[in-house]
Length: 417
Image (tube, rainbow, N blue to C red):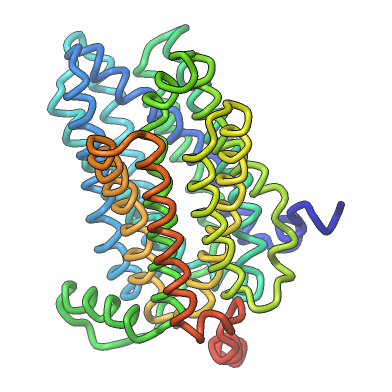
């Protein structure tokens, strides 16, 4: 059993990672509370779901731009400094959201502005932290560190929205913002112990030119490029959740319990994936296995579209969530392990941005397909298309099939430095 469950020893032996883990967990709890507070407050003020969508879209726009620009900054400046700066500015945003919420007549425009604000600066901190992880844990420990982090991410993702809803129920939405601001301030304390992490020096260029250089690296490095392509396909398939309400209505007698179970099955599988992932660290040719596991993700989508029994549908979604989590773990490690230090910020920014963008594209795309095909047909088409493209990518990229978790040349140069 020890070889099956994720190994938490890195928390004991690596003080810097422990500091990041504590700060990240506190931050995730605050973000989960905000995920409830923002839409609740906007809907209470306007009674309009469109306004809720606009606020969420502004947060997404800020995040997308922040991920790309943050990647450029993380390859120019000390990554510790960027993490602290971004966290501090986010905390100020949460503070002003709290002040606005305590007013007799809160301003909707303040919520708009700070949704964009916090999306942007939050993304700056994310890219800087991703770029810093090889320095904090070493490239050889990236998968273990990611697995441990994913456990806290999954658990916080379940608990923090419930906590946020309870706070709103017993007090006021403003206290969610207050606690998020206080939590953000607390996260700065463990992060202060991190060492400076200055990227390699290079001649600064226009930010767009530097971003273009990062995109060019994706095309030149066939391993990282292939991982991003297959990872995008996985992100697209997560859009099947858009069809859950229609499926519950057409196949399961419009049963609200069935709908809730459909939405719970994927996070359950992902949580199991985070906990039961130790075996992935011992894979030989992890690049090949990453591709095959992703194809398993696509196959589970096809199976989900074909079955009409509720319990079989739930089982396929749990498998889908589990395999998606393991695939994400391998993708993260391969991208980090095969990206030179001078590109870590930009590649992490581009990779994370396409992940966020791919989800939006996927949800719109499968919604449009659902206008033409049946619910089951739409799901099968999406899964079969992704499976075909995934197999083609894996078949064409010999470098990915033979890739290890890290580029030994990068590991050797880091240890020498």
